[in-house]
Length: 168
Image 1 (cartoon, rainbow, N blue to C red):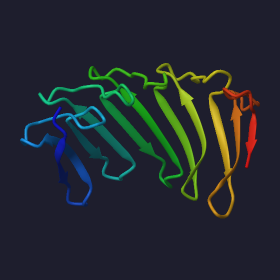
Image 2 (image 1 turned 60 degrees about the vertical axis):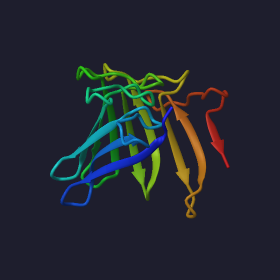
Image 3 (image 1 turned 120 degrees about the vertical axis):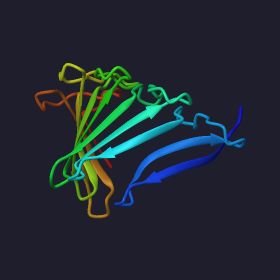
């Protein structure tokens, strides 16, 4: 196997990466360690949406191993306190990642994800055993001090270790 030698990055006028392409030591197209050859990244004019699409060495849409999708759509709230990531296959249909999740919804406070909820392609909560949501609290130094696992009604739920609240 040839190793990645060159990663070409294309930039827009706002100095944002809009395309990345991988090449081997012979400068022939190759797959990077994450399993894609190229991806494009489009931004909405208000910068609240990012649309990333992955391609193989022939330039065809492909699903990457990390989250089993061709397209990753990230949407931010106006104040950037909410982030939603959704996955789509090469055919444009909603798909799920390696954990069975189609959409992640996150609340962000002071640069930390303080709540994450998980959904399937039908918009229903996706459960990891008994929970489909977690919440975290942070101290002034930015260290996580508590994690709680919840069900779709925000009622206590157990994680895979049988714990509802973990404190540090």
